[in-house]
Image (cartoon, rainbow, N blue to C red; front, side):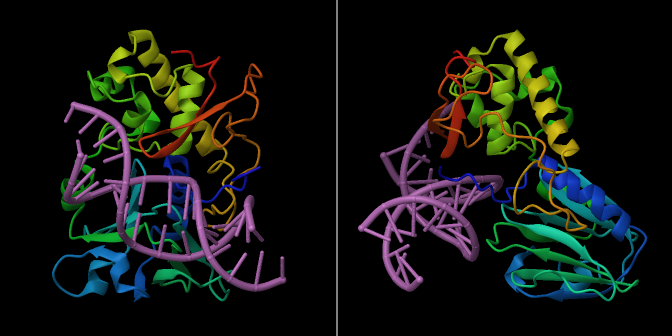
Length: 284
DNA sequence: CCTTAATCCTGGAAGC
DNA sequence: TGCTTCCAGGATTAAG
């Protein structure tokens, strides 16, 4: 069967897993050196020395997340925004040890305890944005994002969907509507909610919107619990892989039987994304 | 208002 | 076996 091997496609659960495992390794430690392997991986930096912008000399005080975006905050207010793209990995190399692989490592932060934080991203859809303050980061990068999907409420979701004539799946993928859902969890949430992905957002009943908000939260929470789902190449900051216990209900399973009813799952394309749904469980 | 296509990039899988 | 081709993904931009 095609495409059974899943690549690392960081969505909200994967980013949250990295955030949670990176925090204990970085917060309270200072950056003694920053090594930039590819200058163009730094997408944005304020005027001045580039290394300083990336946290040089600062001590990490917090790691934030909004949707799929993550940011390291330093004691003097500097904020380094990390976006994993679709193949990004951020992991810590313990003092005196060597990383499993060093190809495609674009940025390294050397910490004062001898450890190092490596940002590896073979496909380079990710990147790093540096800001002088958290406010600047929020204004320039996060303001355009919708509410965080992990805690999305029915009212906020209904507001985001509005009277849009787009397919509901297209809306779920739109980070301005809802921040954190990608192709995998969009399909999974729609299945759990029993809603066909091509249903127009404006045609959703209040009950369906309620079910959808609940489903989005549920599948994302389950993903976080599974430490970043089953993605084969995904590793957290401690280089541990996601658990294998959760299986996708529909994502990537077109042509296979629905785990609920046995009907053959249908594949289609919505918003340039492969889409899978059950024609029986997800009636229009 | 909406959709489609192209762009960025690499590695894994499939086809011949 | 080795080559070529296709495809996946998120975000952005341009065009229809």
